[in-house]
Amino acid sequence: MIPSLLPTYNRAPLSFVSGQGSWLTEADGSRYLDLGAGIAVNALGHAHPAMVQAITNQAQKLWHVSNLYQVPGQQALADKLVENSFADTVFFTNSGTEACELAVKMARRHWHAKGMDEKTTVIGFEGSFHGRSSAGIAAAGGAKLTDGFGPLLPGFRHVPFGDHEALKAAIDDTVGAIIIEPVQGEGGIRPVPDQCLKGLRDLCDDRGILLIFDEVQCGMGRTGRLFAHEWAGVEPDIMMVAKGIGGGFPLGALLATENAASAMTAGSHGTTYGGNPLAMAVGNAVFDIVADPGFLAEVGRKSGLLRQKLEGLVAAHPDVFEEVRGAGLMLGLKCKCPNTDVIAAGYAQHVLTVPAADNVIRLLPALTLTDDDIAEALTRLDAAAAGLASNAA
Ligand SMILES: *Cc1c(COP(=O)(O)O)cnc(C)c1O
Image (cartoon, rainbow, N blue to C red; front, side, top):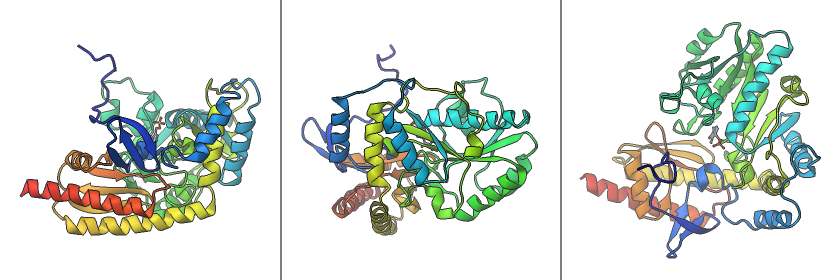
């Protein structure tokens, strides 16, 4: 019999009732160090006082009015995002998937308005992830996402990650956009080298193609810059943001240049919930903390410390781990035994990590992780790895 909860997840037998910073607590009081942060969502950790205060104050005043009216919090957060990024304009959604939908719609309508209706094709990269909607799974293209869900949304093409020749060969006059994660998340924490992002920008400029960056996972301070692409010194035309931007409240955003967005006129897109006053209260509170240069510098310092210790972990357990990869506090450990075994061994040591493709475990901790948390993380991961190694022997 099908469970009352649609069984699309294999959930761990863990159930948390409260959280504080990087720690989660079960009903019986047992505590877990959370290095997954709700899959890169809890940017400020659990129960951050600024977020608690923002949502509590707003909840007593006004939750939702719809986008038929002015929402001052939207204007404020859009202004901040524009001031701190390549973008000229912002649309708020409830999720990364919805931002992906708008990215694809915006790109197609851009070319339509220019009288170039043939430029509907979007090129994506193998191993990518852009959400679970029809456009999201078509953009990513992987069999695990698309199997059984055909007919898929037409107009998408895929090339292997890092294959420059295949990318050039995939471009013709129908290509209107290229979508890429500057650091692949679900695909196994695979950063795109700065040089490649630069080359991609040049290619898009040469061939008249809109460049879409999916920073749903790697954006909002996770790499130590506000947005991951800043390291490469290139800018997209359109960018998807979500996860960390709401710190745990469902929030996403689509950022774009004036040129890319120029065809999106009144009535061309909408959302009932997106950017409601409750979401905006939290979004503004998170942004004001994360966008602060001092906060981002701390993310950089702590990620250096964590990475250095993880290199030591890999060296100490060569039969369990192969390498550390990633950027900032978006780190992956490539495993030699099944990544699910490593994650389960972590559960036994009360430390939470997240699986990814390519047999990787992801560390996506709260950006507010402390040095003590880092020390604790290493103690627990080391014990987990030691248990696995002795099992194997
Ligand atoms: C999580 C994710 C999405 C989808 O976001 P949702 O909020 O789950 O809809 C899209 N792209 C990337 C890179 C993601 O990591």
